[in-house]
Image (cartoon, rainbow, N blue to C red):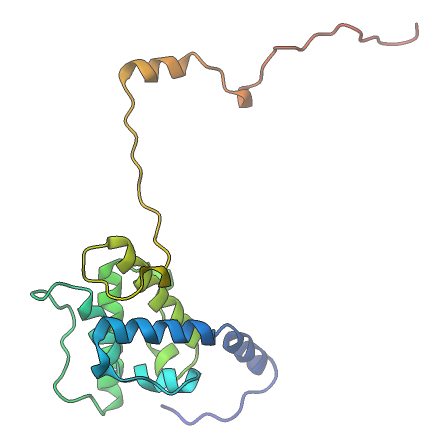
Length: 195
């Protein structure tokens, strides 16, 4: 991580707006879910944005989280025996988590950038990614989700409808109101010019 001095002017304003999006209550819920999903072996972070960032920074907790959402035979992320100490390896571990989250179904626009977590640039984006992952896990309902299902909202699911041929023919006889109607319209009572 590069040494950076304090931000001034517009850069400081932008960074403060990004930091205001971080939600401490959401952090508590996400920590509870990660511990319930992965087990107590992952530990708990110190409270606050910095503690949460340090806890997730090396990518091991995130990798265990995404692996726990898959059945035993198909774990998408390889977790090293010893946590990586080199910066490059830690960032690579986070990138593997992001790839696995996208493969799981998290939309690309909901996924944070590696630098958002590693340099704590946008921890709110990290929270959004974990929320999207939790919502997908609850929605899939495949038995791999652990924790309270009320922690996350279920995603909308497709509700396909089948119409018979006769129902489709009946629909052709109806004129939609956006095409206009002549019911109740007349020129009775209208006058032009002087009486």
